[in-house]
Length: 343
Image (cartoon, rainbow, N blue to C red; front, top):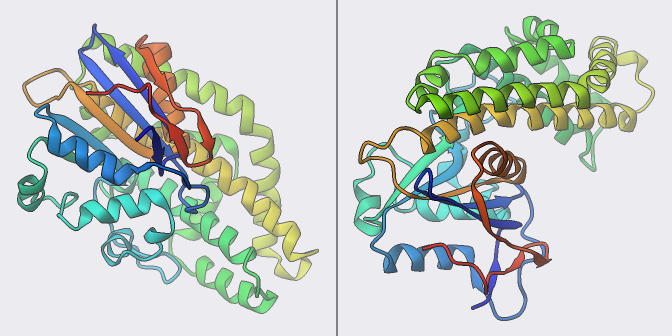
């Protein structure tokens, strides 16, 4: 089949210098719209066929938590339990893919069952951001979830002011909310959290597993990333966060629900975009660690598109990987792969 149905982007990069071949699969965390309608192969069937036919070793990285943490708030679901139950994940393709491999326990610590079905593939939980062992990572995730929840709540069809008030009171009752709302009240405070999270021990230890050249490239990329984010977001973040803090404190002064919804949506987008780098630096470091017979040449990374863009930027522009294939979808989730070679 020449058409691949599922992801929104497919890219293959290679490097003889680093003995690496990487397939980047990009996606969105919502919708199954615009998949192929004509003759095609689904991504899951494509991957399963590849895994069964090849004798080559593959490292497969999915955007799923590296470690699981418990949230003690009513408005935040425990991610791991959601994944196990399959709630909402059948409604987006990356979620369907994760649930498919969950059947074989490929994202559990004990991967015996998974190895029976896919002996040449190692499945990795790429999302470092849920690690409870790094305080700054947890706090960024906490605020991201608050904003995402508010964004969802304010855009519900049947939303009422009374419902919003009750939910906001619940959020504000959390013991961490007041302190973190102050620390995240300015772009400088938020950016400082991002930088500190990139220096936490688990992240630092992972980066040090790379050779000195890779370490320097990662540090350069992190510095450039933060400079670019500041240029893009500093002023709009400060303006919108100031308005949101006022809205959260003075509920009786709201002009309209839609006005507040717009503010929250912009803030949520900024925070989600910037926190991607925490996961991406960790994943890059895992892929590029020194070869010790436990680092495979062939890598597949399946994540949201913002992460995919970050990987593409780093491997192409910082490590000078060759771009062997870029899929051009004729529909949003239908990509011609007739000229693609990976294994």
